[in-house]
Length: 133
Ligand code: HEC
Image (cartoon, rainbow, N blue to C red; front, side, top):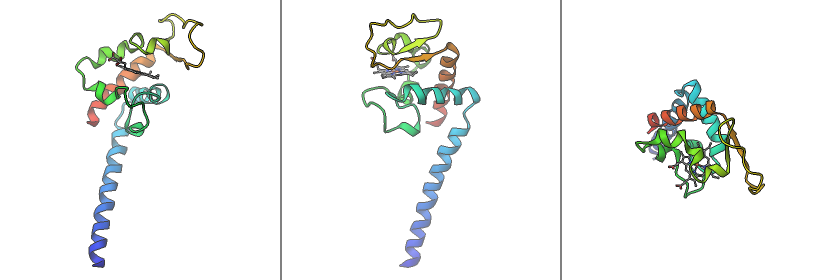
């Protein structure tokens, strides 16, 4: 009986361990640019979107996850211009590209300032998401 439970426990630990290794290794295969993109996504987009395994359960449910968006054939187009698609124009300011947000907008909306270079990093990150699924 005792041997039996040790066996079960060993199996359990190895499953948890392999899962951990999988998540860990899938993090480190990100290229340098994709890693920067992940950080930008975590800082600015994870408030509403699922952007990685880490915030799978902490986003707003009705908002599409980055995993789901990545599966769409036109994902790249969506990410290249997400800032002109609703609801983002009210939140995102692309430095030197979009007009500065009107001061008439409610002050409680926290603005996101990004550069075009940062959008490229985001796209590199989302591109790499496919490897994980
Ligand atoms: C305040 C919440 C919020 C934040 C912050 C936010 N989004 Fe979104 N995003 C949404 C919602 C809601 C939708 C769904 C819009 C729809 O389907 O009409 C969406 C849709 C999208 C889409 C799909 C657009 C389309 O037309 O299919 C992309 C791409 C996207 N977001 C990227 C981002 C990125 C990148 C960031 C961070 C820089 C970000 N979002 C930050 C709420 C947010």
